[in-house]
Amino acid sequence: MLRRPIIQVLRQFIRHESDSATSLILERSLNRIQLLGRVGQDPVMRQVEGKNPVTIFSLATNEMWRSGESEVFQAGDITQKTTWHRISVFRPGLRDVAYQYVKKGARIYVEGKIDYGEYTDKNNVRRQATTIIADNIIFLSDHVKEKV
Image (cartoon, rainbow, N blue to C red):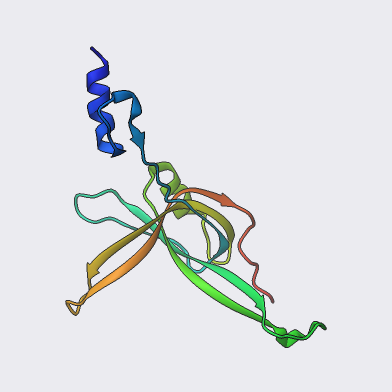
């Protein structure tokens, strides 16, 4: 009796179905991202009418590689690329903690998923946006102290 509703639920996730209910093959997928970097600006909290608030901030990650062919290390041989990520935090407890404690320059670790979306800008041009939806943040250091 109980088996029928379960099969109906599983059919939503089925990639391949045969005549036998025992040979259902489920397709799994994964959308996870891990970032370790420095916060680019203090977070802002936004709320669109009728929707839950969201805390938003940017995170910089750096990629470095050796560009020279020489066996001897030289200072000019290292090339660095900085990538900026837009982080959005929707989860109520984490959203409030992020808004209160994430600060510009802080080194943090973010886990979440990638979300691709579209919006229309103020000039009525359709744009694409990539956002990291954070579901975990680990604070690794205080924000960078300004030098006197």
